[in-house]
Amino acid sequence: MAGDDVSRDLCTELGWLARTVGVAAVDDEILLAITGDDARSWIHGMVTNDLRPLDARDGAIETAVVGVKGKLLAVAWVYARGEARWMAVPRETADALREFFDRYIVMEDVTVAACEELRITSVRGPMASDVVAAAGLSDAAFANDRSGVSGTDVFLDAASYETSMARLVEAARSAGGGRVSDEALEIARVRAGRGRWGRDIDGTLYPQEAGLVPRAVSFQKGCYVGQEVVCTLEMRGHVKRISTRVRFEGTEAPARGDEIWRDGVDDDPIGRVTSVVSSPTDDALLALGILKRNAVEAGVRVHTTSGVRGEVLGPAS
Image (tube, rainbow, N blue to C red; front, side, top):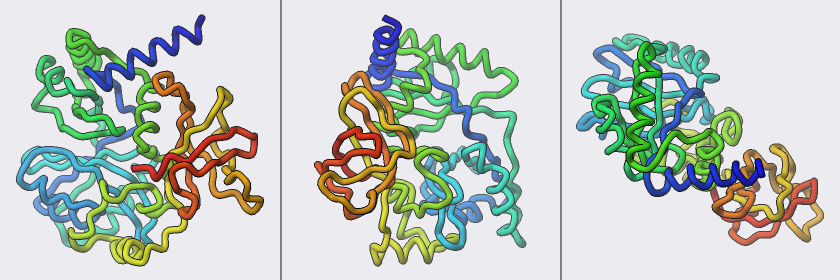
């Protein structure tokens, strides 16, 4: 019965994300405040995506930061409100990223500092903006599609976080939603093919391998650190592996890190599992993996080292 109760709860929460609204803390990321007279132009030259639209409007844009060899240093969101700029980055990369940024601040009037006084809360679903407004927090909200579900990120003052979060959750309940679990968000992001830093995405990958093109990479924006390598890979198509969506069968989930093999082929494995979730609304085990690009074709039959069978659904988005 306990398992049935969990499934029912997850179905309810996934329904909120799809039809009404769900609220969740974003505890695995930290905000970096980017300040100074040159902040806007400097940060534009440090990331893979085109941030110039933020010069004309408030909002949020997903992007990546890469090193000089084109490998990922972080996947991030850049937020703008007037002249102000913030970047949400994985907590585990924040210190190294600040050190990297410091090396590229020469004559510019720019400071990059951790912004511990603000915490990010994610409000997801078609009623997200209405719920944020009902909670009186629209001035701290930034629309985006985090985890593949449309919605809004809200910056909450750390000193009054619990009170503000309670207002958001109450507004969500009034709209037919509520607070959602990490498990429900994990199912939503894997279903959408969105990789997560530290699980599906890390510093060994190029943006193309991580499934970040085109949503977080612009090939028209101009120069940034690592651009030459990223653009060369795109033009030549030399990426040999890519983040991929897979559906597995049965009830026994493969473990993260399990090797994936193509059925009927007795050579080397074609990749490995990076995330797997049991989705009660899909009645399936959904997974992301890093697979050889020549194997990423919808319908390709696969199995893991432990014998779990399934099929490739296509590239992650």
